[in-house]
Image (spheres, helix red, strand yellow):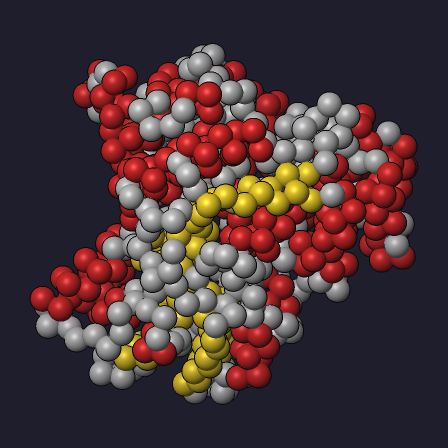
Amino acid sequence: MCGIAGELRFDQQFADIRAVADMAEAQSRRGPDGEGIFSLGSRCFGHRRLSIMDLSQRAHQPFIDNLLGMGVVFNGAIYNHHELRAELIGMGYQFVSNGDTEVIIKAWHAWGPKSLDRFLGMFAFALWERDSGMTFLARDRLGIKPLYYTLNEQRMHFASSLPALLKAGDVDTSLDPQALHHYLTFHAVVPAPHTILRGVRKLPPGSLMTVHPTGKCDLSEWWRLEFKRSDEDESRSFDDWKSEVLAALRTSVKRRLVADVPVGVLLSGGLDSSLITGLLAEAGTADLRTYSIGFESVDSEAGDEYHYSDLIARHYATTHEKLHIPAAGLLQSLPDAIAAMAEPMVSHDCIAFYLLSQAVSKHSRVVQSGQGADEVFGGYHWYPPLTDVSPSSDGVDVYRRVFFDRNHEELSALLEPGWAMEDASSRFVSSHFAKPGADSAIDRAMRLDTTVMLVDDPVKRVDNMTMAFGLEARVPFLDHELVELAARIPARHKVSQGGKYVLKEAARSVIPAEVIDRPKGYFPVPALKYLRGEFLDYVRDTLDTPAARSRGLFRREAIDRMLESPDSHITPLRGSKLWQVALLEAWLQTNGL
């Protein structure tokens, strides 16, 4: 797990080594163990290293293979690199390192872009060919690892973080109206290739960009998730599906133990992280470490789930650490957490993951986390209404009603008149639902959530907050083989009985029933939902700054109404609309925009 950066020139000029070094340095927290720069005429590549596989200098990046005339900068983990290495050695390739980075180069030389299909893991990398002048940017199937870029006629910059790109300069930092609509409507999800800034784009998940020396860029999709079922799938018994899910998850968890350092667990106390803990214990993981976090309660809403995380920790005799954050500590850490965001992230648990990662990084360098189970196995409350949609309807209206933070009319009343725009979020959902490969409203919604919402909300959040402390988070529920299996399972087996039905029943042979049958919880940070006292003062101060008032983004009367009664402005998904606008402004100010 690392940070990558680079500059590709298309105007026959030498690449700017200083710009690449600045972008790499801006990502030093992603890679605290080493740095490297490699320049080759019009191309320059930078890297910050977090040592997880092959801790020696032999795996230093940028990794150059002079014999093959290729190089790579890589962020992520290829879990089957040992198997691929053995296959490549059998083909005559020789290796000088023991990590996964060198395997990418050899695999690409052997199989070209088809090598992507062979990689099991999470990755974003830039690979270049010395002699052809071609550079290839690739991102894993489910976008677990990020890759941002800027592009004009003279050059391309790329990096693992959007703020790192700003360090290279020459970026159009005006707000992207379509991305702004997504942020304020589509639950702060800004789908690729857009970002909140007009001049910055991100490579879509499961995509490959081929960059020619002339600046021509060819974008192709190398993986796609389809919710297609055979007749056999439709008729397979629930017990058979349950067995297949558990077997696939066992494989996924075991794959994510591949490391040259110990692997722990972020244990919230919910079904997903508890099941991961149980499977790791079942696999014989020695000295398993688990970590939980809690905050102060607000009114009747609890700020921790220690009861359940303690239960699991005791059951499996893990080395367990609980971190309790008082309200003052939460508020004090907010600016640092916002600075760690590659893009504005409104979810309350960003700060939870930030503080948890800070504590965990003192003891572990790799953890497994439960993100993705709700999207993949139908755990959210907005899925059941979509099962009742008639076959003649595409389900877009129902999805908007249960998921969107506000409708287009409310958004128009929030923004200053100069920001009038079309309903980009509804158009995006309609377009995605219309794609082939999913025949019912519930399948279309779960496909959208798995391949878009999940990527640009929970997964991005976990990557940013953990990597702020050089902590690698692995997500076994996003193993692509498990995700493809889940897509074949009829929706009725997933959304029944409060959601994640097939996963819950599969878990009964592994973890205590008390954790499975508990009410569904979320990573609770109630102080950012119910803005009171100093938290409300922080929001008011942010929105009252000269920068905020001169930006001309939000109507002042709309902001004042939310400030007067924050609890009256809660989204259908139980988030604070006031926090949403304040977080955007705070992120822009943090990045000098």
